[in-house]
Structures are given as C-alpha cells and as structure tokens.
Amino acid sequence: MFVVSKEMAEAVQQAFYEQGEWPAVAELRRHVHIADNASALQAVRAIASWRTLPAEPPARHHEAKDDRADT
Figure 1 (cartoon, rainbow, N blue to C red):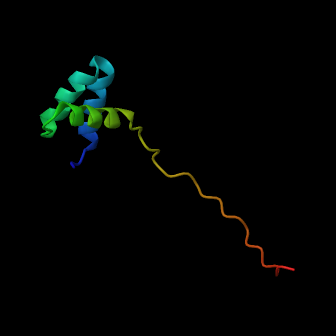
Figure 2 (cartoon, rainbow, N blue to C red):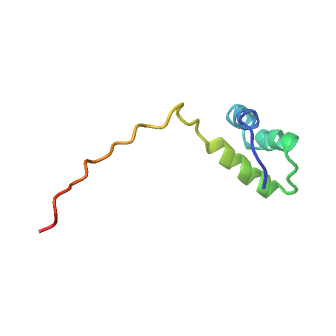
C-alpha cells in the first residue's frame, strides 16, 4: 500500500496518456518501490482512471419532512 500525491498522480497520468502503460509504470516506480510488473501495471491503470473531483461537492437537496401521522 502507498499514498499517491496529486503531483505523482498527474505525472503518472501524463506518462500514461502521452506514452502508454509501460512508461507510466516507469514513472510510478520513480516514486514508489513496487517489486513486480503486474502490481505496478495494476496501480498505473487505477491511477490513470482517476478523475479530478469538483471544487465543491454538489448541493444536497433535502426533502420536506412529512409531519402527518400514517393512517
């Protein structure tokens, strides 16, 4: 298990989309020691699929509470 910073994720994603999976694996390994290719490739694919979250979460709509008794 390892933590991925925003900068690290951006570097891996850039390598993935510009050069492909294996250059992205090399970029990931510059930051994190991963012993085997299968695990590194799986991590790269996961990181490449991440999307940036919106700046603020969407507003939640609350339904009006129905105070009537069930009949």
